[in-house]
Image 1 (cartoon, each protein chain N blue to C red):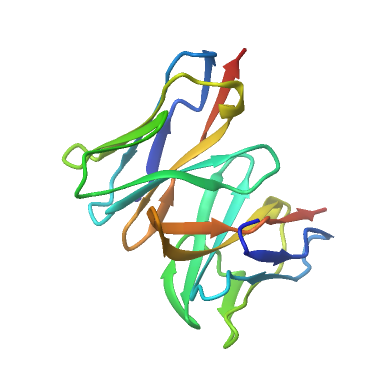
Image 2 (image 1 turned 135 degrees about the vertical axis):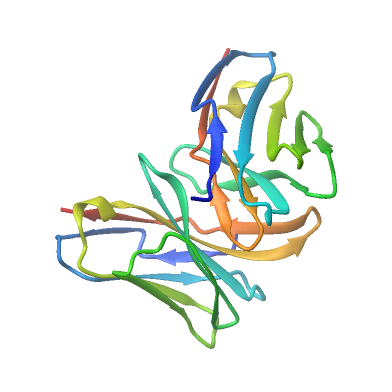
Length: 109
Length: 114
């Protein structure tokens, strides 16, 4: 069925290194791709998003890339900090709402 | 604080029972979304309402139902509860913000079925 695959499920990086999380989707009607950060015990919060007419978007240390032909998009976090440690969810939204299964990111000081 | 409120915060009930979760969207937001988050399933979209009408349906079981009232608050009804229904249930509302379309999540209701 339609879904979003997200990899990796867990990711540990040293403080200052980069982290990359990748998602693939299958519903060609998806045209909006948000990324959410969820800290332990808290609600998901939007950190960045991209629309299907854009290939890349950057907001300070966070960037998202989209390859609509290949149906995959990625989250890039540079110069990681301990406070970046959280679970990150990707989503593909069009007529339906599909979420990835999450990536637990740990930034080691 | 996102402006989306959910009650109750925690709910413990037994299998076979029925519960109602309540959500109030941000002021002015017409859309309400319900999500289920369990440990092994991640975040699952259940259903969306827009201005009182069902707009989109996801992986919502037949035992579950929802509605949005004229004052735009929404209720998610879960019946014939099973152990596997234990999860965190989030409600969200949406609007166009500075960064474009944004969903604002409520604090969630943690349901434990024993």
